[in-house]
Length: 103
Image 1: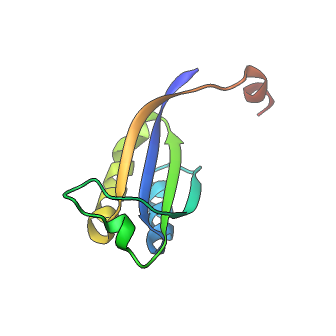
Image 2: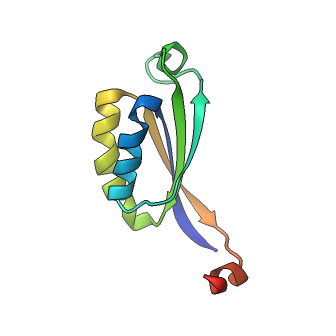
């Protein structure tokens, strides 16, 4: 069991390729994408996730803590330009020793 960072991004699906490329360039190579996400924004009463005409995506990825700085540097300009939000939290990863040994 060890500590990793969880990266959660909600953004317009049109920007999915750019966001995934940015994660990859930061060294985060694995991710999951959930499409057709809807919700109500929490910032400034802005309900951009409700009102968009395009589909939203939810991206979740995990990485070692030392990769967070390049992730933030790569993702922030995209979110500022195209909208969306990113949350980063600390979580514990649990791996079976048998799974690790077989890799």
